[in-house]
View 1 (cartoon, chains in turn cyan, red):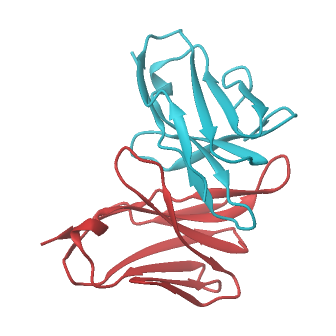
View 2: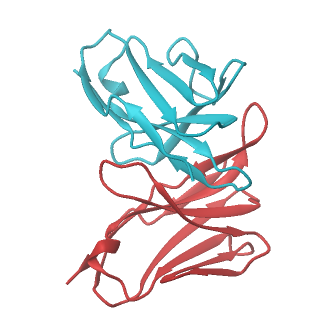
Length: 114
Length: 115
């Protein structure tokens, strides 16, 4: 299993500002995933972050809005840029288990944009 | 388009009974299906994975079935306890935009087990 921590756990931000969310894993992993979970909704994959290459974004998500860094095999950041109230959501990072298909999730970052 | 459906209405059952949650999907041919549990304010926690060639899988009080003809999975919790109260998500394997596998999640069903 993998233990994942995220910072911050929650934040309240003003419209037009940016927030960077950190994700730390206790072991080296190839792929890290960033999800968004809007109120009452399920998880939607934003992008996949591989170390040493640019993140791959899913349909509906773009790098300018959600830039991602992956400087090493245990760490990634997701920035939510130029925020609006519609960005209020829980943001989760996850990793895939080695030799298995299950995913381990961080505790999430609850973002509220005023 | 691909779609995963779970009962959006909360399921309330009495302690000791069996809870049965449903996951239906369309326009998918997943190699496997997973079930996760999510508590308020927490990330999802993996429970079970079942492959397309498996009809049923069990883990302690949990049982999952996978019918690829009906395109449906059933998730059972026997002898339910108040501690089982949570939202349960099903997730199907999909293809990542850049290659590799990804998970697509259903909307989840909230289960409440009452004394």
